[in-house]
Image (cartoon, rainbow, N blue to C red):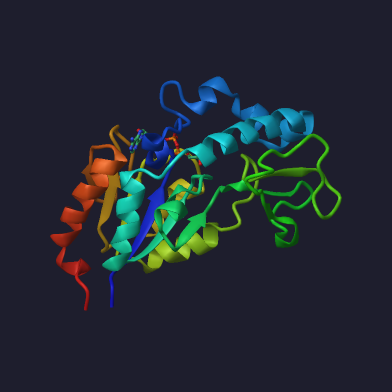
Length: 240
Ligand code: APR
């Protein structure tokens, strides 16, 4: 049996693909106020402004490509049973070839009902020839079509599934997240006490005091290469 790895990725994972992170200097929340573009209140105040923000990100995404970090994680499926829990709304893990990806905070390429964003009957993937959500465009239930993004103050429907994945894992790997946003940041506590935790980030990230975390202080692409070597040194992570 292949060892099970749970990965928690954040904006830093996609930084080398040209995406700004949120909280670094010059990050997205510095130029676009969170309250305006990432809350239900912001949506109600100005849906067109919110749609335009995500339309812009979506256009950037179709022109972007997975980086070496995404590709190495996809290749690791040869040796490990991998589940990637990502806070990212991009589809770069999938485009790199990863097959088990849980999007905690939604997906940029999708749109949904603004009455019930989680209603699967009204979640649609935007085709390449219709990338923008246009003013007044409606979902299947007649409500305004909105980006399929989990905004601040909204429930995170997949958090339970993600916690189960982490608690079943033989190792937890955290890449490119400031661990500032809950409930995603709390997933680290779902790891069993005996499993190793690795963290890849070029900057210092606060981690729980009661857990030993192997820190790889590097960007995602080089960091994942280092991680692969480090995992090979872990006797608990060899196939049985
Ligand atoms: N490789 C790896 N990590 C990087 C890189 C890189 N090339 N560049 C920056 N980082 C790190 C930063 O040091 C920081 O710790 O990525 C992290 C990015 O943190 P945030 O900007 O806070 O992004 P994230 O943790 O993903 O945010 C969580 O907050 O705003 C919401 O919904 C949004 O999903 C997002 C959530």
